[in-house]
Image (cartoon, rainbow over all chains, first blue to last red; front, side):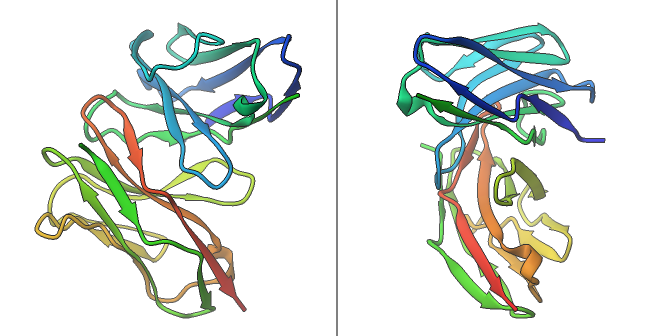
Length: 114
Length: 111
């Protein structure tokens, strides 16, 4: 089973709201990722967690705050977003954050910021 | 630096036609290479991978061979179906775990 689940599927929020995206995997993977994908563009890496510790932050604005409470869960907390943050947010996981480890993606959360 | 270049789309084919989507890369060292597919409104699905030179990845009739000498990883399928219509992404994996994607190629298959 290579399933990564994400909730919610769709999210609409105002610029003053606080919301969270959730990602879960039960494959025993120790690396988890957040990507942002704008329409008709490839995914762009935001964060990498390895063994529940943040290992890469691709200079993401502080209005995005990741959290990895345990090895199966990854959250992305959203606060004071801008309309240009509207995108598909993809979570992925892999066995390790290594050079040969396949990343498996979830279905994504489509975020609209009004 | 590391980068991936894919042929621009959209690619429009008739059912049962032969498919080639070109992908070339620039990288330090020998990264693993991947093809992902994205159907409308969905996340990315792994299509195939290759981890070293001359490896051939294959899945669901799709194939790609890791060519170090030409720094290429072209995707091929002998006979496409309407259900293959999607966006295809070529990607390389850096040692940090960061996937570097090409721009994506949209494939439209007409009956």
